[in-house]
Length: 155
Image (cartoon, one colour):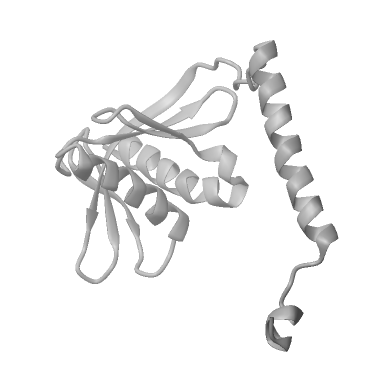
């Protein structure tokens, strides 16, 4: 072994510590499965309001949000903004493409009685609870929700 290889060895304690963590995680998962532990689910809530929305990419990078109740523009996501919204939509659209579903079926943005917001894709059955990503990220969808609600109240 040359001098360079000898210097790149990991300390024995680090390897043992990593091994201990892996074994501990496996033991805890095994105990959870054997005892029937299930993670807490959010309490059942009722729908306060819900909108069917269609998202359309514009060549300049903007995303147009249409309320499918009247197929009118409800909100515009300006180019280079709202990265979280774009990321969530990208994931949902990727799943649609895998299932050979086009952009026509609307998504459903729902506000629940307990204050949560969710985005659903009825065409794939995919459901995203937006509050789990934190208030700032969920706030991006709140702006879309409020603009759509305002749009519908004007119609």
